[in-house]
Structure formats: structure tokens, C-alpha cells
Amino acid sequence: MIYLMSGSLPAYLSSTVPLLLLLWFGSIPGVAQTSPDPEITRTERSLLAERFASEKVWGWQKRLNLRDWEVKVVVLRTTGLKPNTLGNIHWDREKKTAVIAVLDPADYRMPMEAMLKDIEFTVVHELIHLEMAPVLSDLKRTDANRVEEEHAVNHMAEALLKLDRGQ
Image 1 (cartoon, rainbow, N blue to C red):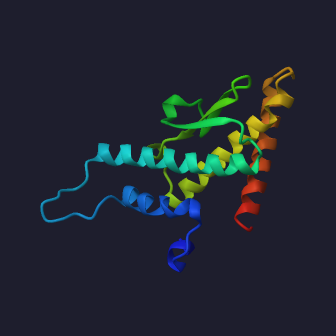
Image 2: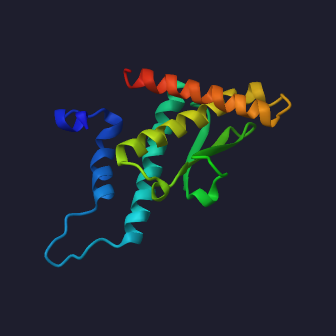
């Protein structure tokens, strides 16, 4: 919001913010226009989340030195994710491809700014898993060490995002 007020946007946001605002709040009703179709709005918001997450993936891939990976983003409803999760990642180490799933905006119950921050957190979190994959792949996975891994990845993602946001 500060970027919008100052009139200066980082390059990676300059094309996204106007689209973001238009898609999130919908178009301004005209004389012959009725209220927006809820299905179109939901679809537009999903596409917006996918585009936003894809741009964040690109930026964080560079920072985490994962440029040689082809990472795609998909937006899923809660029914497409494991219970109590906001996203996931699936990768193929040999092909160096990965797919990050982020939660659909339709399933968020928070303001847009908080939702976008959460989507970025999910992206960073999943990319850290990807970075750690070579180290962890040979370990015997248990529920206990998965919980510890999630805890560590959450702390790393929080730290990176705080640094990025100047906090």
C-alpha cells in the first residue's frame, strides 16, 4: 500500500498491482452493468493468486539459487490439499521440475494483504523444502522428523521474509 501511495513500485509489482486491485475488488459498476458474477470473481481471484505466487516463485528462486529448476504454481481448494495445510510441493530431482500448490483465495478468511503475505510465505516455505531435498532425501522419514522439518522450514521462511520486508 505504501508503494501505491508513493507512486513508486518495484519492477516485479508494477504490472501486478493494478491487475490485483481490479481483480480483487471487481470492476466499477456502470449504468448497464449488474453486480459481478460470483463465479467469475472466484475464478479471477484464483488466477490472480496463481500469477502473484508465480512471480514470487521466480524472485525467491533467484535468491535461493534454484534458478536451474522449472517451478510451476497451481492454486488448489482445501479439498485438494492435506488437512491443515496451506500448500505443498512435489518435485522430480532428475528432471529438476517442481509444482507448488497454494491455497485458493476462496478458502482464505482474511484481508487481501494478509492473504498475499501468506501466499508468499507458502512459496518461500515450499522452496526451502526444495532446497533441502538433496540433504533430506536419504534420511528415513518419520512423523516425528517431519514435524521437526516443518518447524525448521517455518522458522527459515519467517526469517527470510522478515529480512526481505525490512523487519
